[in-house]
Amino acid sequence: MAAQSSAAATTNIMLAVYEKKTTSLDLYRPLRNYICMVYSEREAQNLDDDLQTLKQYRSDLERQSDPSPTSRRDLLQNYFKALCLVGLYYEEALAALNVAPLKDHFDKPWIAHVQLKAALFYAEACYRYGLELHEKEEVAEEIARLRSGISALAEAKKNSKGAAAQLLEAISKLEANINRNLERAVKENDRVYLMRIPSQSSLPLFQRFQW
Image (cartoon, rainbow, N blue to C red; front, side, top):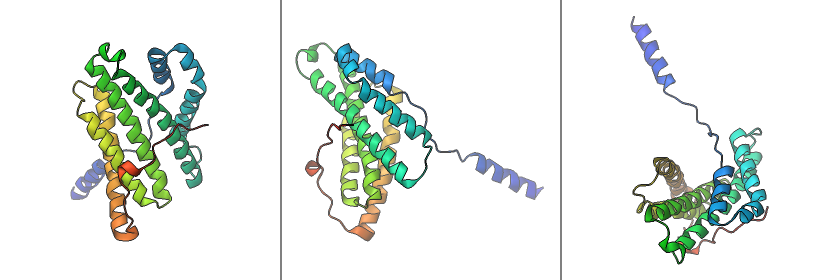
């Protein structure tokens, strides 16, 4: 009887271990609709190739048919570039919403939503770039980038009242991932690399990439 109880307990523990996997996410349609709404249908058409590229990278990331380190690195680099592209559009939209004439035509909750989105994609880019930097053992810049991402999320969350639960959940998950990698990088730097951490203000801005 004791053996059966022990086996049952072990089974319950194992059932609680879930597989970690990337979930399917459609980035193309909501981004195209957003560009069309904020800018124009013509602008959305002009950017369709970029959006299709982003869609393909996301699909490749979800499938990961080739698990080799080189393939994974190249995939993360491409996805990072795509995130920079998306983040730039949200940042441009946020800047436009904070000045006339749009400033007086949108409610604060909607502007806060765009701010959260801009921060989310910027922080995601910092996170993905941090993975690349870690593989290259450039731990000092990795730490600075991750701290920059955390700062962006923290600032955006100050105006998160009334934001969509799904968006807040995505931010919380990303924040946890960044903090985990940041803690690892700091420990490695303190024990092994002993590199000087650059200030966030000295980091080059993420640029729009040419595909």
